[in-house]
Amino acid sequence: MTVSKFFLALAATTALTFPALAADPIKVGLSGPYTGGSSSMGVSMRDGVKLAVDEINKAGGVNGSMIQLIERDDEAKNEIGVQIAQELINKEKVVATLGFINTGVGQAAQRFYQEAEIPVINNVATGSILTRQWPDQKTNYVFRTAANDTIQSAMIAEEAVKRQGFKKPAILADSTNYGQLGREDLTNALSKLDIKPVAVEKFNIGDTDMTSQVLKAKEAGADVILTYAIGPELAQIANSMAKLGWKVPLVGSWTLSMASYIDTSGPNGDGAMMPQTFIEMPTTPKRKAFIDAYHKAYGGDRMPSPVSAAQGYDSAYLLAAAIKQAKSTDGRKIRAALEDLQEKIEGVVTVYDHPYTATDHEAISANIPVFGLVKNGRVVPAHPEDVAGDKALRVKPKS
Image 1: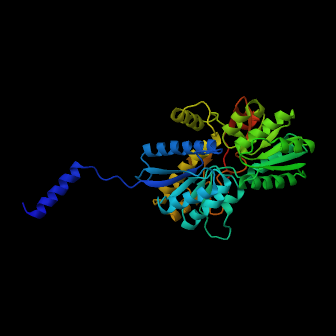
Image 2: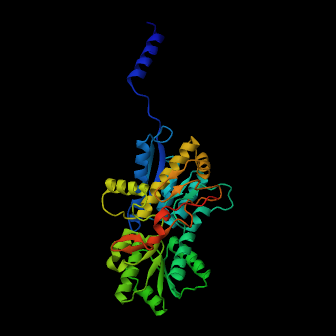
Image 3: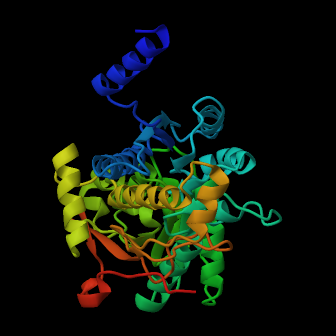
């Protein structure tokens, strides 16, 4: 046997003996706060994403490749979020990132994805500005699967003023970008109803006593407190009201559904109302399957933040569909696919049918969220008629 024939035979034998090398994984960033006061949102989001990616990979992955999640804990700190974004882009070479729980972190960090032309799907952060930070640029790489604060603030104002009949709201908001941008959105929403808040109070992350702010709202004659803040501090509002022996309704952004609010406020937290894209109830077969799979994988009988888990889960499927359609991991092609997604995705929150366009990167429209109510340590529908029958599954109107 000649040398050339020997190597040809060896190559043929090797091909028969060893399986073909697996395709390179598709690296996707997963960024959020897994420790600290925002961790119930971050962990739930992460678990929802991981659940979806496990399902996708078990079904064969995307275009023959497995999705590999690169997890990073941003601790809800802007500067850490910036460092993580640069690491994921430059070192890990991710094709996209899922996450951003906190509006401030998103504002600070997502500009690096914009510059690198890599898509990022905000699956929890709700600051209205996040998907329109660069109105002068032809393309936008920031998408969202959460109900933005323009939607939520309008819902809060409508619920408090029109549905409940309150006329003297007080606004209590934290000092973060999220709290202050939300306060501004809420003030604008109230003004459209010819209502001006009787008090507007601010507090800091980590504050454990809201007696001063609550007392000022009480002395101003407030008949309802409207909030924009994160769970642990929201609980201190409810606890301070109980301390003062003063009880008025608490209506605020979706974060009143967090376990850190419900568990820290205890019985004082009952009755709080908030917009929700997902309430942990098996109102559709998809939701039941998701709830069962989540608790099988992670235990417990209540998700720390059901909204975060569901939106995280859905964001992974939307990204996977875009990569599949693009037949590429090039960021520009993935963005273009997201903006003209051909596959209809049955998600937990809704059914996504062309959820995005080149000028609309918001998957959630104003008709999708409903009001939740804290009752005996869980979130239930505030108005059961809003989720009855065909209202259980709400979809974005086609443009």
